[in-house]
Length: 574
Image (spheres, rainbow, N blue to C red):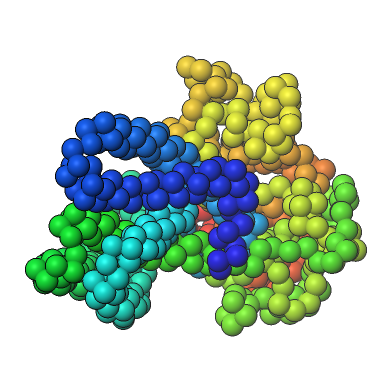
C-alpha cells in the first residue's frame, strides 16, 4: 500500500523536495532560541556586551523572518501538492469506475461510492501534505533538541528521556483501537451518504406517498449509527490523547524537580537551566505533533485503504487478442445460454434462439422471467455463465466491448437524461456529430418542433434526470440519441410501458422509424406493440417456453395466448 501511495508523489518531486527542505530549516532554526538565550544569560548579559546582545537579537529576528517565508511556502505549496494528488486519485478512481462491470454497481450504493471519492480523498490529501512534513519537522526537532540538551547536562537529559519509552508504549497500545474506531466511523458516513442520496433522488415518490416520516426514520437509523461510531472513535481518541498528554506533562515535572536539584547542588548554572527548560519545551512540542499526527495518519490510511478497495475491484476486460467487430450486419444467436447472478441465483437456463439480420424479435412473458437479462447479455453488461452469444457468427466474448457496444442502441423504460442541455443529451449518442445531424435525429424522433418551443431551444438545460420534461418527451430524447448513434442492432426494453396510450401511439411511430433496417430485440409488456414482430419468444422461468409469430402462438393456445387474452379482457389491447 505504501508503494502505491508514494506513486502519487512522483509528478510533484520538485515541490515535495523544496517543501521538505523548507521544513528541515524551520525545525533546525527552532533550536536557535534556547542557544541564544543560554549565551545571553551565561555570557552576554553578565559581561554587559551590549553590541552582541543587539546583534544576536537582530540575527534571530532575521532568521524568524526567513522562517515566516518558508512557513508560507510550506503551507501554500504543500497544500497545493496535496490537492493535486487528491485530484489525481479522484481521476484515477473515476476512470476505474467507468471500467467496472454492471455487477459492481449492483452491489455498491452510489452514496457510498461518492463518500469515498470526496471525504476519504480529502483526508488522504491532508495526509499527503502534512504527513511527511510533520514527520520530518518533528523527528528533526526531537533529535536536535536531544543533542543540544546533552551538551547542556547529560545526566538531566537522560533522566528526561526515560519517559520516551512509556510514551511509545502507550501510543502503540492505543493506536490499533483508534484505527478500528475511525474505520467504523468512515463506514457509517458512507451509509449516511447512501441513505441521503437515495432519499433525495426519490423525493418525488416520498411526497407522492406522504412518507416523509418513513424517510426520516430510515435516515435517523444511519445517523444514529454514525453518532455511535463517531462516539467510539472520539472515545479511543480521547484515551489516546489523555494518556499521551499525561506522559508529556511528566516531562515538565521531571525537569522541574531534577533540574532544581541539580541547580541547588551547583551541578548546572542558572543560564543552562533556563536554556534547558526552553529546549525541553521545544522537545515536547514535536512529540505532541507526532501524537496528534496519529489521528491524521489513521484518517488518511483508512481513507486510502477504502480508495484501494475500489481501485482493486476487477474491471471489465476484453479477452486476450479480442477483435474489433467493425460495422455489424446484425445477426444474433444464443446457444445454450445459462446465466446466474453472482454465480448462484440462476436466471436463464439453456436458452437458444436465432435473430436474423434486420428482423424484429420480441421477448414477452411474466415479470422476472429473464427478458431484461437476455437483453443485458447481448452488449455484455453481464457475461454468460455457460453457452455463448454470437453476433455475425462471432462469440461476443472474443470481441472488444467497445466495438460491440458501438453497434448496439438501447432504449429503456427508465430513461436517464443528464442535467445538461437538450443538445448535449442528444449528442451523447455520438459526441462528434454535427449540429445538422443532431437536428435531423430530433426530427426523426418527432421532438424537434417541441424543442423549438423551449426558451433556449437546443440550449435549454433539462434538469436532473430530465425532470423538466414529460415522460413522452424524455423518451423521444432518448430515441433521438439512438438515431444519432445509428447502430445496426437495437434493443427496446419496455420502452413505452410507462407511457399512457395516446403518448405510446405517438412514441411508437418514432420507434417504428428507428427499427427500420435494424436487427431489433423488443421486450414488451403490452402485446399490442409487438403483434407485427417477425418472431416472438415467450420467456418464463428463465427458459424459452414458446416461440413463433403472433398468429402461430395464438393458434397454439399456450402461454402467449393466455397473456394476450388476459390483456384483451383488461382492455389493454385494441
